[in-house]
Image (cartoon, rainbow, N blue to C red; front, top):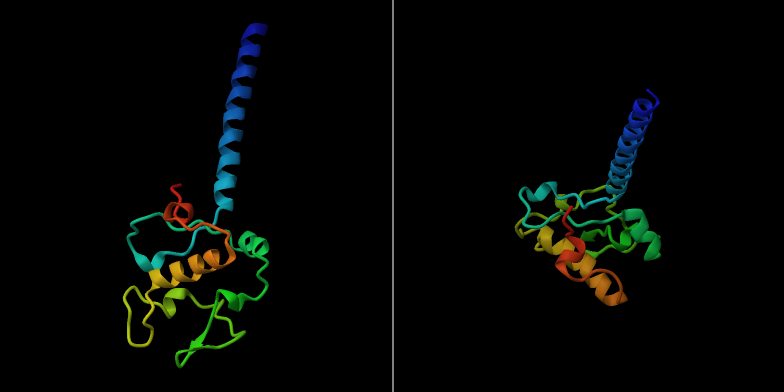
Length: 132
């Protein structure tokens, strides 16, 4: 009888250990934030992995307008932020008369040019567009 109880206890312990691994993995995956790509529809690559707060802290970015810019009449409006506006509200999937920059180019130029300028951060496609 004691052996059966011991075996059952070991099985429960083993199962709970497996569950904890899955729980830890699920929490870690939820900590990863991906860029909003809903405007694109079907993607050729996974959405870029991007933890907004960690990125800005590491890059020492305090001004939202550094990334969330505003353009009026073809000129950048300094210190004006579009942080409450989706990128796709200004940038379409195809270039248009009101905004010649496509959504794909807006993401790539904005992010990659800063990484090149600072000499830090990912530059290759798979470094941002990571498989799950």
